[in-house]
Length: 146
Image (cartoon, rainbow, N blue to C red):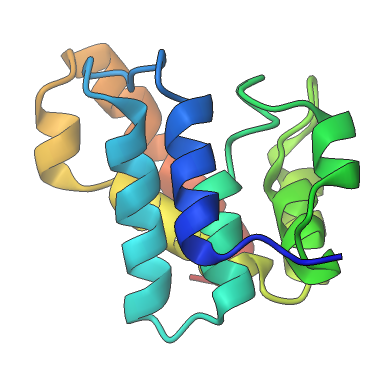
């Protein structure tokens, strides 16, 4: 079976998240592009870049876990996406452990956290949200040893 190219994965991710916006009301695809670019700048592999485009797809219900299971993606890409998919009522410690235990996932999460914690991005949020998210992202960075 032929696997999707990075360009096809980008198109798929943009379409899957087309109706979604981030906390600041920006198109969600901007976040995906920033994370994919961050992975690439950090020397990530094509599998990691692909996972960056898809890292929130299952968690945000943009694509189903059944889709991921049968998608024309490499096993490595699928495993990274699964590792990055936070589960309901999952502790940050359990989530971080799964990321650390999955080859390639930590780099993608590092790029995700870097974009999420970008001061310019946080500046447009209200103070309570900004404070809560800043602490959340700092905690996850510490759990991941970043």
